[in-house]
Structures are given as C-alpha cells and as structure tokens.
Length: 136
Image (cartoon, rainbow, N blue to C red; front, side):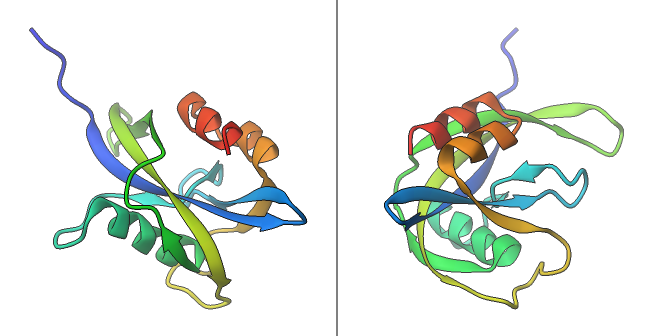
C-alpha cells in the first residue's frame, strides 16, 4: 500500500540586500511563537507564486517581486487539533522585498524580524527550509 501524498502549502522566502548581505524576513507562528517563513494554503484563482506573495503580505506586511518558480521545497509535520501531525510539502518562492508596511492584515498577531540568511537558517526548525535559507 502506498503512502498518502503530503498536503501542499506555499511559502515566501522574503529577502533583501543590506550592505551586500542577504537578509531574510522571518515571522513568528501564531500557535507556537517559533520562527517561520510566511506560508499558507494555495488559493483558488491564484497561481502558487501569487498565493505565496499574498501570504507574505498578510503575515509579514511586505510587497515585492515574486519568482514564478519555486526555489526549493521542504516538508514539515503540521499539528492538527487532535494532536496528530500531517506531512505538508511546502513549495518555497523567492520574494525580493521592495516595500515593508507598518499596517498589514496580521499585524499584532506575529512578530517579524530581518536576519542574516545563515542566522535565519539556525532559527527555523525544518531541515529542508534550513537548506534553502543557507543557499541564499
């Protein structure tokens, strides 16, 4: 019997260059407060890249240029309300940030902060996401 394929989410790897160094924007998860990248479920009527771009706006208040193809993917176990985990595959899209807004849909629900890409890799839990961030 084959394994059930993982659910699919999309993520925005929000980046900027500061003094020649790549920085990555992380946000905190609403549930656990751990550092993550903006991510969510695909949206009807939007491409996967566009959905990732929308998640970056809603969760982190940033706008910019999103790549049309994923730069990588990773898997994590999403905890359900019954305390069981489901594997979720996340397609990661690069978003080059050109605007950071003070007001955005999830402001006050999450913290957001810029980190050197290597430091950001050490702050997130998912090994696949760590690899993506270290490669920036």
